[in-house]
Image (cartoon, rainbow, N blue to C red; front, side, top):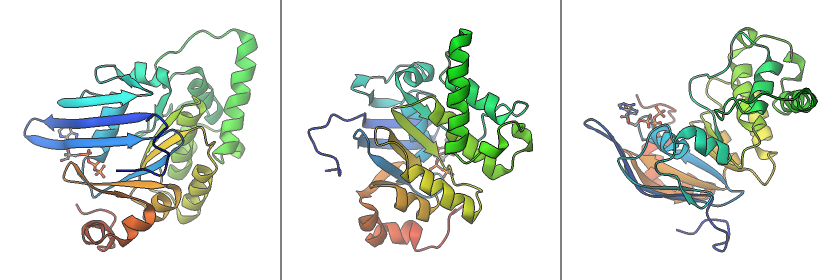
Length: 259
Ligand SMILES: Nc1ncnc2c1ncn2[C@@H]1O[C@H](COP(=O)(O)OP(=O)(O)OP(=O)(O)O)[C@@H](O)[C@H]1O
């Protein structure tokens, strides 16, 4: 299926027939997916559709039962998560991976150091200043500049989600993957998140799992809809809004969660 990007551009991510079973649960069934550089892609679907499992297969939390994962033109099917992170993949998780006892700035500093990518290194002090600057700039980008010195444990839920996005971004990824970044955010926070995502540098490719249709369909140029482990529809946000299957399954219910 064609995507909005030109066919001449090589894919930044290609999944070919990936399958994943957990014992008797067939969580992901023969998924093919191609994402081009700079694309904004949303992955939608009801609870249990297999979205997070696909994310885990892309980031390398575990391997597929069968099929192939290519990142930045390389076969990474059997490469561990930290190596994929070093190649330029950065992601958030549904559950927080922040350092609750450290400040916002220190979290972002550690993110800039590459802690999330699993390669913390000793930094000469000359570089320390640059990374601190990077951390502060990122706090501003995700709307946390007034909270720099505050401990993560003292942030609101919404602020923690903003920081998680900042932690993923401060590593300067080529591919950014966000797992339900709007979950639990207030309406005002969701609007801010949407603006921030729309303002991301064009060089960053974004894949987003999101139950909030306003956020997902505003940010995405292309949408992949999953159900029961498989991709059932792909299209532009307009096509997705007008698709009867999607409507029956998801949008028409008016529900965010079906379980
Ligand atoms: N580690 C695991 N062990 C066993 N079953 C799992 C595991 N991870 C996911 N599953 C199962 O795989 C299926 C797909 O789950 P997944 O979390 O990928 O769905 P999802 O679309 O991300 O759902 P949600 O929107 O609720 O996050 C579900 O039936 C889930 O219970």
